[in-house]
Length: 242
Image (cartoon, rainbow, N blue to C red; front, side, top):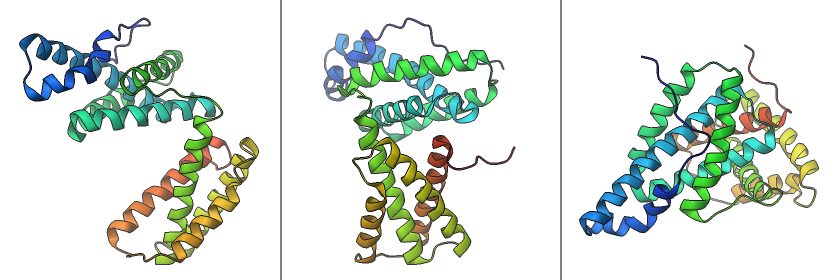
């Protein structure tokens, strides 16, 4: 079956803006008119979120966005996903993400994909601001977001070393990626001092009680993968061959 992510250039977002206002009536029953408006809002949000998630997956596959655009997109998708999860539940979000990923993986990385990804970036910014009131501010939001991400990745490496998760070569590779990322981010945001953040993260883990469980090992593996992905996006880590 031939499927596409539908995203017209000019969308109407009025229905999505109703969503949070209509949630109380949605949950408590409310009047029929309020419920109908809420249903329409959720339907519009479903369409918008699937389109946004599809664009995100398509860029993961095709890598068309510049780093600054990618971080903005990632931040907006994260804020939007958290807000929708809080209101409609993780299963609702997971269902739309699954559909979006399946569609995105069918699409070629051509000029149409570039246009679709760009539309998704714009749509994510608009819907995120409407539903959360949050707005991405270049040079500030990205700095804070990447500072938090780097700190989490540094903590992940410290835990991996503390618990000896994985082979020594894998942990050394993780450290080399983190060092390269820290140096690159230090050039972008000279007031942060990313190497110092990495040291603080290690000292914090060294002084903490850590329960080295298989579940924690799986989480650390996801941190390692995220570190590699960020390094690739920054251009300081080589992407996988092929």
